[in-house]
Length: 433
Image 1 (cartoon, rainbow, N blue to C red):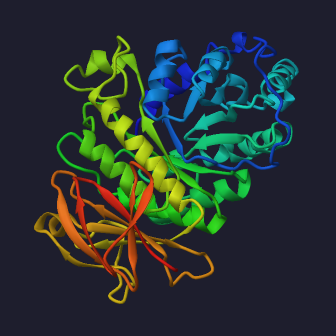
Image 2 (cartoon, helix red, strand yellow):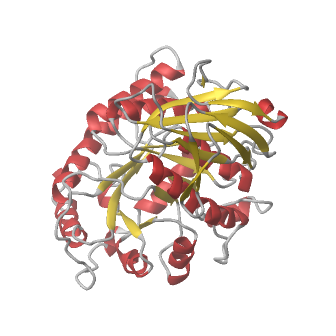
Image 3 (cartoon, rainbow, N blue to C red):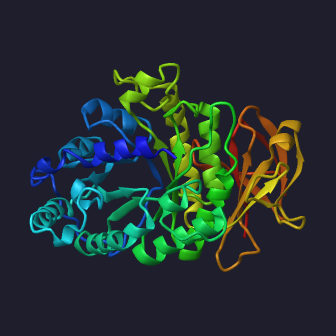
């Protein structure tokens, strides 16, 4: 785990901002005529963990790169708004680590009330950042904060990010249940039942220096199922940097693979770790990745994300009204995955050698009341080094989705040939279902 690193980032995000929270937003707060009582996602989430301050240059870069949710303390809101960006407020007053038991604090609670009053009616407010990777012993206090924000700032997200499956039971804060899967399920269960969140978010970093991790799909599948059971959307925080000697900075094809596997499992959001942390460039000058260099210029990872982000949003928007009905693998078996049933309504007729070696992934989507009749399938090439070709067969006439221009094109009957780049995906629907 990244305990020391993420602790430093948490401290940087939470500390030193409290003295700035008295800045008035009266000049650009605009009351909304109405707000829902509960948060709704709207446009699928494309964001990051750990980013630069909001300046003209950074805000423009984020907007141009297809990032649609930025993190900022109160003074940065003006810049975010100037570039049409939804924003999530960062303040130590909402973090249980920096303001424990804030509702009982005679000094901090009035400060929090005043802050919420200043920002809650702003039209581009999306949510509030609470905490990263909490232990289960903090869930009760987090739940109080979530309930408070739901009442005082209706329609806003109270954002919490959870541990990955490779966290220890001590980090998770749950009793030993016998194995990592049982422990992690208990962690998710306690979080959902105690906090009553509107979104599940977790991080999992897959790309090591000389190999890949083995629990990525296991973790993705457990979060997917927990989200489905609780009728919640989920977001995957994906690796976009070299944050330690034991990991590598993902390239374009690997970022595409991360985006598309998240979509195939039903994810409605991605968050890149990280956008910019200057110390990574000092420690790992070979290729620390990220979205921004210390001089503010974009990285190759940013240029890749700039192309991938709009496509992620386009595909996720098509899938948002639907329910994830299954995430099935063909070929290579990964831990925690389910192989495609032999009688599946969508199946691959033929796949080139590259796809057979690394495996293929089919995400089924459709009407929740018809779990055995998927209307859409998202096909992913799990080889992030090589392109592959495959032929998809359905039970009726098919159409393919162009994620660049957001249009559907009818195929010739019940079969469609797909050419997928490394880590690439294609969304196909069965017309009339």
